[in-house]
Amino acid sequence: MALMRSCLGLCLLLVCLSVLHCASAWPVVRKGDHGPIVVCLKDLIQLRNDSGDVFTIKLEAAVKRYQTNNKQPVTGIVDAVTWQGLVVTLSGGRGMAVHAVQKPC
Image 1 (cartoon, rainbow, N blue to C red):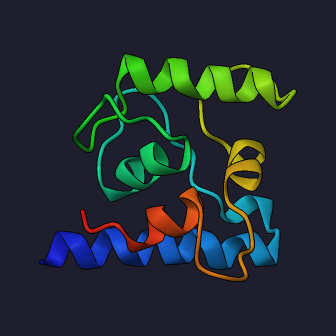
Image 2 (image 1 turned 90 degrees about the vertical axis):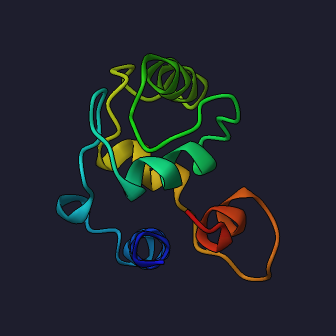
């Protein structure tokens, strides 16, 4: 239950930070990292075949594809630029960003 609250809290934090557009506030997440932030990242990047809370090689490849498709520097590391593309301000209640916030960990 505590992990679920942590995940929800981190996802909500990411959504709120997107409104602030404060680059220094974004966490840097890379291969080998783990925790609720990675679970939320997997939802935002729509990675369905890689369960768990570890930033794996599969997730790194998905991040690189996302960065390539969105004309970002291709590093495989989720930094402020990547987060700002992934996390959007929402109105309404549909889409992958909403799912990432609502999904229990």
